[in-house]
Length: 614
Image 1: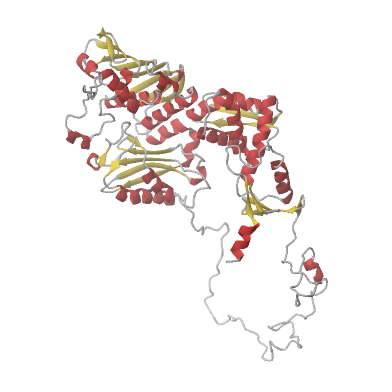
Image 2: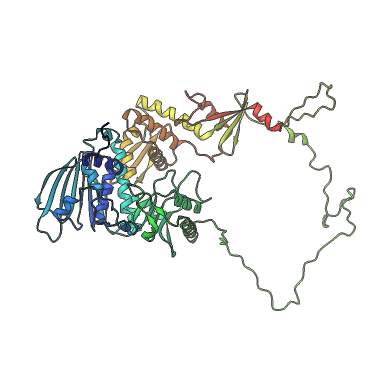
């Protein structure tokens, strides 16, 4: 039998490596911008077209490369960062594997222009699918420029699984954020289809966060600063009242590198225990400085996961640092001893001769068991007449059915019945709101429990779908239009869903960079804060974006229904409960919310009786 084991060609091996390192256009941006950081660049410019499918161009003013280094950079595992295994435990650079350029060149058309400061001319290299087409001297600026064209052109299966442009540019924005936050001293610009998304000047950490996420985040930031012999922690956390419904502004950086660490995230969440509104997440931007020998970053191809030697010891430090910062800035609730008005305490007189001490009057003849006597009004132990306030006592029991337990079981004129409180009728049923979250009503088989928020979501969803089918809805104009400023990622999402929002009755126009004016809202909505509705809509849409245009309207309706539905904690009047139930059972699918969660459940009478038979 012939041998079947063989070495893979370099081009195939590079494509396999690309599957681990390059997952989407954002991965290319991440790897190349990190290379620019390692090259000592002070300015980095990123241009993308069609969310990176057509073109990714990155220019920096770093140290540049010689002709030999430029060619060697495209070989697998070619790196200037390490030379032995021991170097893995003292890495301070962003890249060190030597796989990025080789992987990118295997699945794209790549052009490199690079020049060192001391060289007179630079180097131009053109590689297509791991094959070098051209290498020659050229005139270019100091530093390095890379053009990545037609990503995944020779791997159509990978290209087919790319998401829509909105989703892909969102991932690119996230990668830029993760690099820009820990490097505020570097000027970074991002352009999409020649339109600027970010133009970040050199600044400090706080201003960089504000530049990335909008001016509104500035008022929520609380500074964190803690230094121990094991780790140094600094950065910012957001105040609980500014917490958001989705995870998106939570960042950990270790020695300037973004990481994901659920264990440390739990330390931050524990510090916010009992401070956050339900189902919300605080913002945090925390930087950890730790000795490279105490961490291992060589555990994942994308280097977003890190192993810590003493993570159990770091956990309480993070928790205490965040908790202490919240306490210092009066974010943690405390007893308020400050009074709006002052209390004047008189000073004692110099002479105590004329001071009259209070006297205690007693009635030595008072007998508490003697109800026949009524003491005088001035004495203690006064007893009111026994028959006062006994008139019309029957009114206390109006609407209450009270029947006595029969003394003799053969006596048919008595029936045993529980003590019932008065209840309002809903279609012959009694209704009750429980914990400002559930609506209870008896049915033939037991007790029906309705989730009021999900029920409202289902009602609104079917209304919005009817509106979208007709493409006509009245817009209620606002007396005072509201201006909303979004970060670039949210701005891109809103621009994508704007046509559907306009058809739903929203009157929203773009006003400047990442700023929108809300002039009208749908007439079917009772909107007190349209800005909050739009922000909630974006949060919901980010959780479950849809790429297919045919499904876009349905997703918009789902997201808007969830954003507009009444929240838990709202006390409903009886008329509102009745109206909600009437509308719910008029829906085509009352049993499930738009995202498939249960709206109602029935507790059988047999299950209730079991609890009393134990």
